[in-house]
Length: 208
Image (cartoon, rainbow, N blue to C red):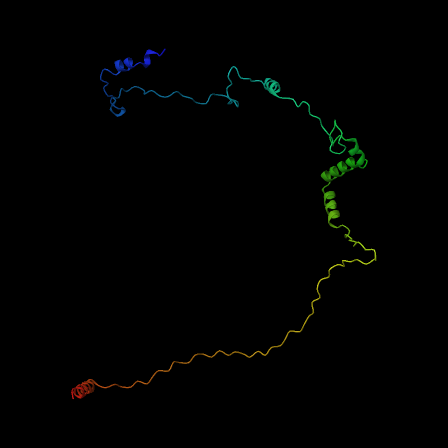
């Protein structure tokens, strides 16, 4: 059943009278009293709490949280561990007896002593580095064939013969400065009177 608050008749009865507008905050009259202020959410005295405030139904103790995790944690059932070295079931490579027999006796103790010596004596670390750098040269032996001679002898670098530099005839190239460009001689032309006379004679010759 729908509440009468959502009926159309209720909506009409509410908005039936005229709703007059209200003046804004700029038109409010000043009363002289202290205006209403928001609540003061300041810092409380004392050290602030690091964790958030818990709800009553939330777990506050770490031990209870661990118990809750263990309750929903699934166990690894029906898992059989096999060793990578011997392949047997029930142990891993670290606890394998065959792996311990393969190691040299007292090797772990010697390594621990060397590391402790390097920590307390830094010079021992430098000596160890020198031993690693200045090692004996590595000797490589080539496999011999049945005849006693290696079919694949080592490849030697090519022999480069030194020749004297060839002397070429080098002629010096002398740069000459360019001379001045030749200019034609300046010849005086006919005067205006001569030009008119020449033009008159040419016209009369063409009419004849």
